[in-house]
Each structure stands twice: as structure tokens, then as C-alpha cells.
Image 1 (cartoon, rainbow, N blue to C red):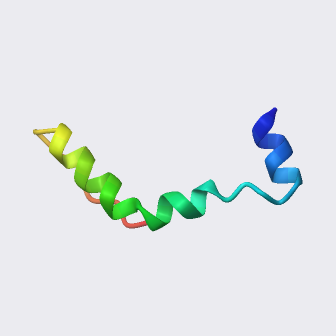
Image 2: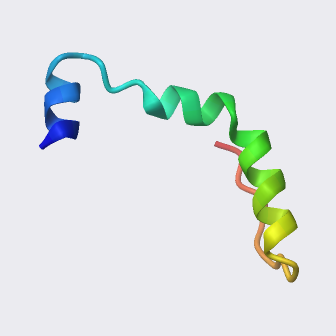
Image 3: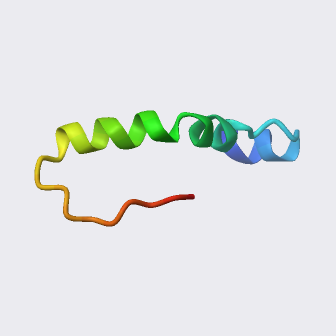
Length: 43
């Protein structure tokens, strides 16, 4: 429900924040997942 409210209000901006920090997230995932056998995603 909260997400719907944010979208309706035009305030659902967390996707933009995620994209801004994507390199950080990917690096952390690779540290944790030792047998990383997935292609890098680039979105």
C-alpha cells in the first residue's frame, strides 16, 4: 500500500537511488557469492 501511495504522489524514487549505487551493490554481491557464475548485468 505504501508503494502505491508513493507512486501516486510521484515520490517513488528509490529505483534511481539503486541505479546510482549499482556498482557498490554488485561489488558486495560478488564478495558474498564466492562462486559467482552469472553474467554481469548492466542496467
